[in-house]
Image (cartoon, rainbow, N blue to C red; front, side, top):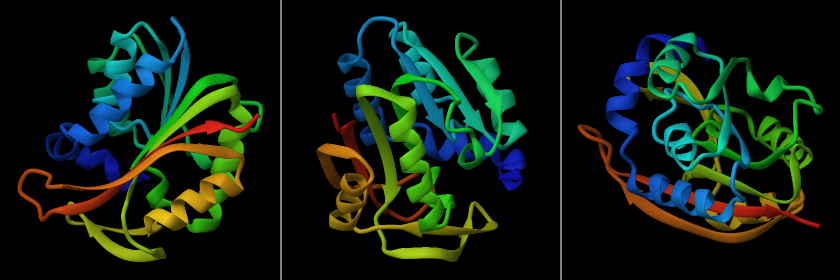
Length: 200
């Protein structure tokens, strides 16, 4: 969303060093075949996800609606391709990928839109392709919230519900965990990280 245009550098400063996200990105990078293609939904500034995956010689297409985020992403991760778009509106035939990632971008959607994006993601993935996501651990649908001083609406699931939603939309959940992360200068946050695989 456009509100992130002016928050790009602040967002990166507070949210680019999450060790739990970094660990899942590393796991995905290791699971993929050489030169695999990855679609990063809500790619933000490209750090850490696109940066780490391109360093592993994977091809990354990052999609974000905020030009401010993409400007930083193009500077920091020149090996990736970045597309300005609202990822929930990407066409079903946008491409075919070995993995799809969405770290804290789905939570900006309504639950109905999250489920539509999961259906699209299953269609973009090759058989056996992987999905990696990060979400905030709470139950709500389009609730008002102030993020970095900007009013937004957010949606979330508790861990068992997120697992059930992933399974209902064509994924086998390989791992899912709830962790605590404290971004610099902000209160601790309970987060969920899931790795899933497109069902055969």
